[in-house]
Length: 241
Ligand SMILES: [Fe+2]
Image (cartoon, rainbow, N blue to C red; front, top):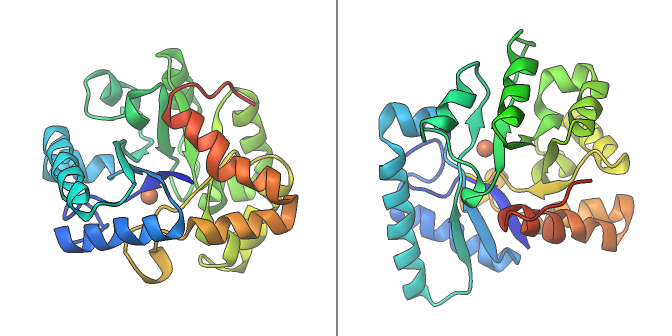
């Protein structure tokens, strides 16, 4: 499986706190059946506390450590970019990053409210050639209040990433119900873990997401959400939906 939303870099955001915890998380992901992990530290933390260069160095150092573990898991660079009116400019100046240097960009909409810049900023991202991958829309109030809005974004070519934990109730029953509705209605193109810790509620449990989706839409369709689609996004050749 391929996980395109994972907080695996140590000490840079609210993900793992130490190198050891990062390695434990990566090993847990490997045991879960994940073959490729995209490191997606929060844009705000990277730029305010450190720098993109520092985040890349952290990833390179993790890659070297993983080599010594002798496990077959590949680590790629990405970023979780929260949407503010400046986000398109942040990409242009290299302070925001896409997934593995492709045109696909993990974008986190504001959790609450519906600031008036949202639609314009998303259009601007598309205008500069990027394809927004919307992080966990099931946890975003503006989408919860108006699911048609997600359908509209998807029709405009954006991608919807549901979080595995949402499908098993880790963010409450309402989020679970909403996530299931998205999966049933072809409004989830990718399931990712959004993992933060090796164990517990924010562990890299992509398999539980796959199993939950398989119960809703069958194994072969569920597999596309954890393998086919995220793989082609990470490789930069996802053809749309
Ligand atoms: Fe995240």
